[in-house]
Image 1 (cartoon, rainbow, N blue to C red):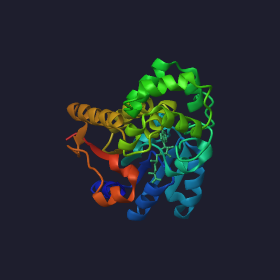
Image 2: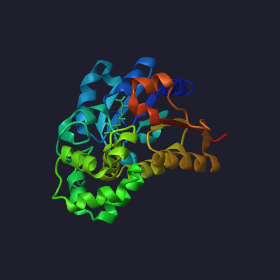
Image 3: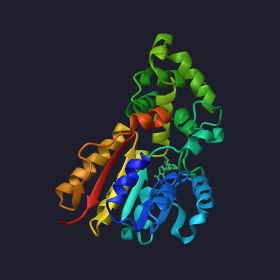
Image 4: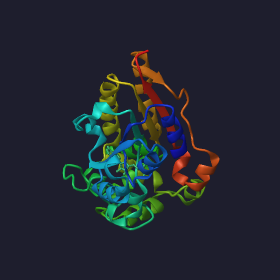
Length: 287
Ligand SMILES: C[S@@+](CC[C@H](N)C(=O)[O-])C[C@H]1O[C@@H](n2cnc3c(N)ncnc32)[C@H](O)[C@@H]1O
């Protein structure tokens, strides 16, 4: 959705931009290139992403800064109310998926970790969640965050199994549990939904998004700014849509996207993950 993000940004002041989900720095780089007068602060809760993008974008000198920070704690960033645009591209990065040792991918064997910030000892790993939660809790997690129809069946199978510590063990168990005809009709990897659910739960992704929306409401009530969200999950999209509507109702600005923007067929063709992307935008102003 990068070209849609850039075209929305081009209609508004774009001197200081916060990239709230830096990842590999793709959005930050495109913004720095498209708007030569801009400065970007990129934040991510994943230190690997911060280090990688800091190095990759050092050619932009003082126009680009990278910082390790969770967007749920946005209000702790000095000068955070002084930005013209706040951009968020939610979810998991290609780097996180590509490194088997991070445990995000059902396509490669690795420890079942899935923490976006592995240095955060207060955050349980996916293996700890699987092995320490009861079947009821797991069923709820798989249903709510993965929309997995076979949530109960998979949760019961996990509880009958000795502790699971590797991604490949979980994939094998799901393959053994789901009936073959169901797997053939799924049109996607049989473990995709369970992996997505665990990742969202481990990282408290909806909780962090709620905290972020609260901070943005306060920040945006103070100045004109554009706020952009690309999300990939209906739960997240609902939270964003509801917050934007409330802000508009409170008179602090207007929703720029009555209906969410979605990727072009070409982008969906190129990038499987993009198929579920939704872009919503809000402009804060008091007129
Ligand atoms: C889809 S990727 C962003 C990709 C980026 N737009 C690019 O072009 O490379 C999402 C990133 O958001 C980060 N992230 C997810 N939740 C976060 C949070 N609560 N605070 C900060 N970063 C977060 C992830 O670690 C990941 O690197």
